[in-house]
Image (cartoon, rainbow, N blue to C red):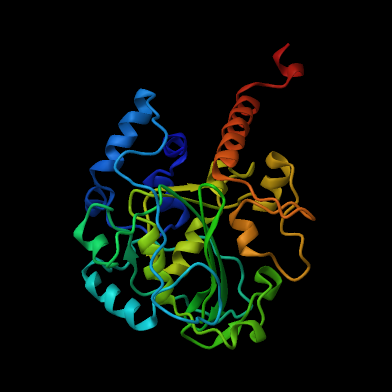
Length: 325
């Protein structure tokens, strides 16, 4: 499964063009590590032994906090543990060299995004990764994410994160309390209102630590317009399979096709049909079939992706019959 997704991982040049948070080039080799290099070679050699070598079965992060207001599914560290653990990898924080080049008009024209510093995902074999937890946690080979954001004076901030594994199982689904007063809840997109977020106690640091435990630098992260999710999480990750880039808009940069359209065209499913915004947990699973609640595993999506990409390439390479004759 992992090796099947490797051909779809975005190149650094494409990530730079679209404004993904990038670690400076000279540290990427250390961040990616030898395990990924070996997997890349195996994919080129046509070897696929099922699960990727060097990574064990994923295990959930330990429950470090009793009742957390805003957590729907999964477990989160306490706020104090998150601050302490992240402090151990303070050296890994950096300011990205690239920021988004494409922004939709904001409801608050005076907004000036200030993202601050980011954490980078860590190699699974590193001491830094092991320092994030006392238990024997193992990262996922493949993780699928979707985030919801709100507008603050410092720009977009995270309000919800949903994270699934390659089998389509939800490992983490939580609301997040922004650190600054909210100017625009983006209810029309997220479905979240002031009433929903008012009692939430989950902080960005808690979510960052939970994600860094589940996602190592070798993990392939799957999603749609992932640069927005990573910017909201204040995380940088190199191995991305982004459906917004895999199916370019016919008119090219900086336009992109919507996930709703891709799901209808290639999976024949209707998603994001709710009147008050869409559910990130359904968006992350590439859609919940209306009325059925059906979720797709990453294997199903990958097979559909490969078939759709082949058909896409064929259509672009073959001229219409009227022109070919």
